[in-house]
Amino acid sequence: MSNINNLTDQQLEHETTVEEQIKKNQKDFDFDIREYPIEFLMTKFNAKDNENSEIYIPDYQRDFIWTDKQQSLFIESLLIGLPIPYIFVADIDRSERIESDGRLEVVDGSQRLRTIYRYCVDELKLVNLERLKALESKRFSDLPLSRQRRFLRTSIRMIELTQIDEEGRRTMFDRLNTGGTLLTDMEKRRGTQDSPFLDLVEEMSRNDLFNKLVPLSAAKKNHKDDQELILRFLTYSNNYENFQSQVRSFLNDFIEENKDISDEDKEKHRLDFVTMLNFVENNFKYGFRKSEKAKSVPRVRYEAISSGVILAIKANPKISNQKDIDTSWVLSDEFNDKVTADGANSRPKVKERIEYVKNKILDQIK
View 1 (tube, rainbow, N blue to C red):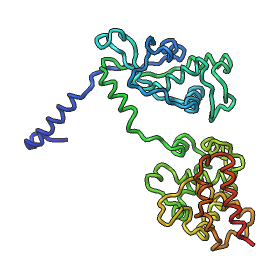
View 2: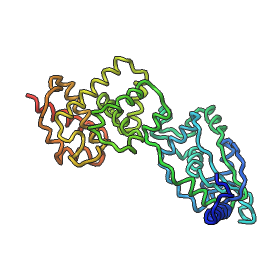
View 3: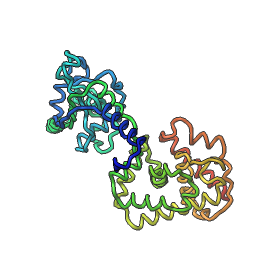
View 4: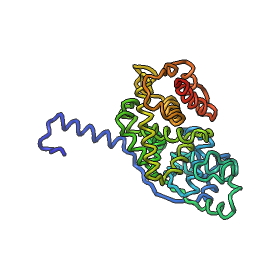
């Protein structure tokens, strides 16, 4: 803390300037924290009649851009009781717009409000759910009546701002919607789940040979991209034939199935992982990379090589210690097309690229 008696004139001038700028830009407003049941909110918000709704969406808000999947996962969160962020609204005073006196302008949360509205009026069919599979392709009216009632009693938390002008509302909207970094799927898993299986994944990510063959920046490691790759190796190499179309759900289901993994299965996964890495080091000129100068490894390429290698070894265990097998095909346009083409995450493509690697390796063994 500065001692004002020891400040130079220049320092005093700087502190004065700082204070003036802060006071000039400070927004003088009050707020209340409120909770409203969804049923009550639906009497105040009508997405089809925004002009006359008591709760309305201003023109500076973005259009309704959430996909049906995003909307469905949000509704799923409400149904299972996960906490959701506050919705910010501002009480509009007659001094600003007499026709809006007493209305509530949505500052942040328009996508959530519009999703709730769509679901409650039966416009939204739930898709790609992660937990409530029984509600896949179902609408609100398909819920049991008792669950409809409970959903409509679900409370939504709101921060109601008062005495805040339009400039302040726009500034708040901008700050609430910029500057954040979205969590990766692996960060979300580690943040919401804890299991011996995920602990195993984290342990395997510290393998020195893996870190040598799969160069990742410090930023990517901070976002747990290394653990994501290992999870994909374990999932695809053990279950690729059951892949459907959604990578995220496919990986999450495998985690759930293995959350109580036995010590015996842990050791099996460790052995497969090390065996695969040793084979790649001994036989692939650039490891998982596309070229000597490549500084990263695309996920799909890694999945295909790592899974195909261990499947080939399981099909013919005697090749695990072989060296200098011809793997020049991994640099071919044919292979590159298989790991970069459109639809790379369709079921046929996943199966094709993994088995391509497996069969190319087995073909080298006489």
